[in-house]
Amino acid sequence: MSIQNVRLEVMQFLEKKIDSFVEEYLIPVEKIWQPTDLLPDSKSENFLEEVKELREIAKDLPYDFWVTLVGDTITEEALPTYETWLMDVEGVTQKGENGDNGWAKWLRQWTGEENRHGDVLNKYLYLSGRVNMREVEITTQHLINDGFDPGTGRDPYKNFVFTSFQELATYVSHNRVAQMAKKYGDNKLSKMCRLIAGDEMRHHHAYSHFVKKIFEVDPSEMMLSFHYMMKNKINMPAQLIRESGEKMGTAFEEFSNSAQRIGVYTAMDYVDIMQKLIEKWEIEKIGNLTDDAEKARDYLMKLPARMARVSERLITPEQQHIFKWVEPAKI
Image (tube, rainbow, N blue to C red; front, side, top):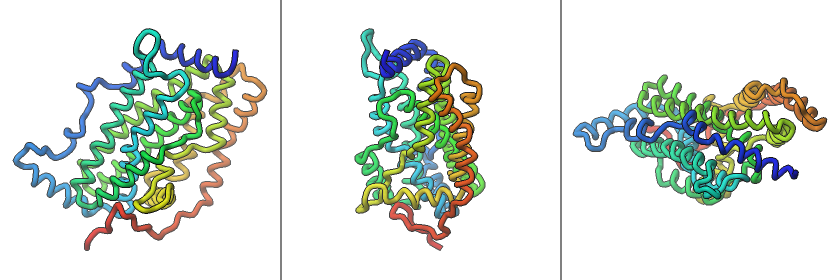
């Protein structure tokens, strides 16, 4: 049987359990938080006072913090790109022979949860008064238009490695923003980012569970796919981010510098996530591997230490880039 057919068979095997995955890792619409639960209530007589308080607190948050928060928001708002890409993965179709394809059901419900993240952050930015929303909206539209290539093709194994990694990376970023917002006294923003981080961690557990199940039934090919993704490095969803009037991808390095400078997401976090995946999937213990898969495992086990040495030598520029998205605070 061809490699492609084996992957399709594995996806069909996992699809039979999709309802249990949905029940374990996603939350029913009626029970999960919604953006309006965390923002000033526009129907309330105190709405304007609440907005004024939100804006006063926002004045104290530092510039790199705002750049990072805007970049995180834009990345969340580019959700249509991610759903389109995942719907094209081998084994995922809108409809199956017996009605809804199980993977499509998963992805639609995952998208529904993720969609709330951009909604709540966008509204917060709009109310804060610290952000040029038109510039943010232009960047968001560009990011969706420019598309995103995670380097996985239609291969479900590689795609699930990517989503396992990215969901954990977004957890780290949103959780750090939550901690910093609390430190600066912005409890509303802290709570919304903490809840978003919680969603991302649940989604990470789901996708990493899918990978663990694949390791059980097709260990060598799953190992080779993990090796491929780590050797080629994970592409960040915001990699093609740009400001208005600029070329594709020109804002990514400065956005990354802001995140690194303020400690929201660093090169060492990338290494730490890789190590966590190696431990979570118990790479060292997996048996019945081909010779090529054994070599891939050896490479993976040594990679975090090698990348950590490289990360320690990286120097982040101290000078801030002034983005069109965020205006420096008025003194």
